[in-house]
Image (cartoon, rainbow, N blue to C red):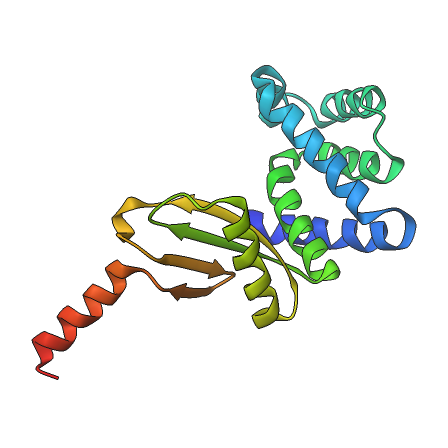
Length: 181
């Protein structure tokens, strides 16, 4: 089983439990804060990923960290389970998949908009509203800049790409001129 598949299984189980027993958004925040803690402390990340450290010691460490961070019992159980099975390396994948499930549950999609120049907040909001009308869902927009686009924007929602860049239009024009149409 691949890491991604294993992470997806843990995330699915965690999400199902969170929907029944806890607040799914609070669980996401707690998972994210624990993952951030591990990322910020290199020694902690090394210890938790080291196969030479026995799983029971990792579990004891995770229990202590969960207590100190005042994590809910739901999140603490998941983290202890991952530690006991020596699967803490899956934490980032579990968090990513959990977020995907949470967004699906909330009917939210992520959109990445890349433009040639920086967009202001009003422009990002307008793009978000237009995408919400198209998708029928709430849209969370992140903006990036790529001056190679020359103008316009490229929007990604999942696997869909809407390329309205000047660069792409020029490429199409070049291709059409080469074909003689």
